[in-house]
Image (cartoon, rainbow, N blue to C red; front, side, top):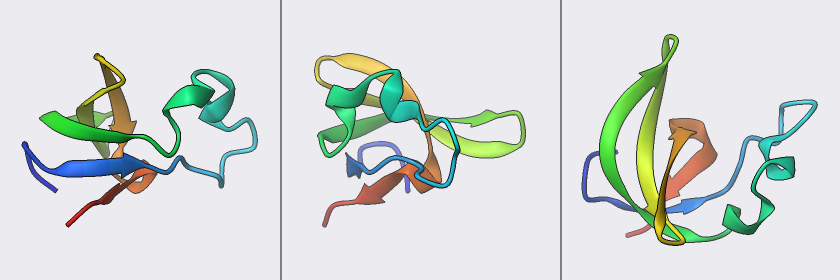
Length: 65
């Protein structure tokens, strides 16, 4: 994935206390990657979704073609 890619936020359902509890409206929504980053050593991206910028791990997104 790279800046400018359109992605769907799918979430990381392997986590016991999944992040859906934090912002449930975002899951299943479409967004645009605006920056690449890392959380500790995990590749992540800043995504513009629902009018705000949020950070997601790359495995929490799927690229839309």
